[in-house]
Image 1 (cartoon, rainbow, N blue to C red):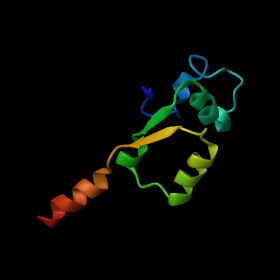
Image 2: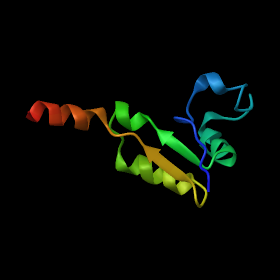
Image 3: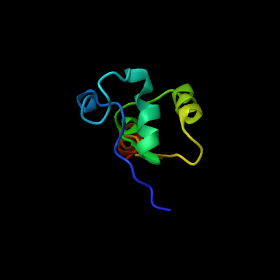
Length: 83
C-alpha cells in the first residue's frame, strides 16, 4: 500500500484551489480524507495538542487512515536543557 499525504489539511489558502469555495472549514478534514489516505501532523512539532483533539481526529477519519506525527520541538528542547 502506498500512502499519500500533505503536511496538514487546515490551510486557508487552499480554499478555492483544493477545497470547494462553499465547503465550510469544519468539513475540510473529511474532504481531505477522501483524497488522501494519510496526513502529516506538523502541528505537533510547533505546539502541544490536547489528547481529546487526537481523539476527535481519529473519530472523524475513515478506516485505514494514517496520522503521521513529527516529533515535538519541545521534547528536543527539553532534552537539550538536560545536558
